[in-house]
Amino acid sequence: MNSNGSVPLKLLFLKEIINLMIQEAGFITFLRTIAIILLVIYGLKFIAKYLLPIVLKKAVNKAQERAQQRNSGFSGAEQDVKVGETIIDKKPQANRNNQSKDVGDYVDYEEVD
Figure 1 (cartoon, rainbow, N blue to C red):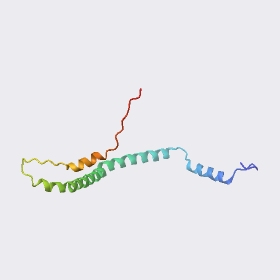
Figure 2: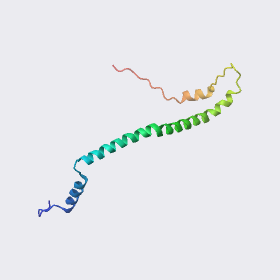
Figure 3: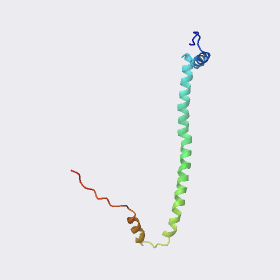
């Protein structure tokens, strides 16, 4: 309230907006709420039953194509191998020594009693 005892105009406008937003709980609003809930449930069932398998099938096919593209470079080397022949791929020794030198400093810890 103002000093003269009147309610500010902004507060009245806010109360009118709130009153318009609030509806009395009646039979029609109850039926409308139930109808919306049922539409959402059956809509989700429709999506899960018909649309989701299509979307998942496309995603699986795309992932399969990517995997085949990644593995296509390896198949060329396997064609030169005779049946029963074993191939062992090793890293060169120079690379292993360089990696072990970059490990860091040795820290000696002592027990504290």
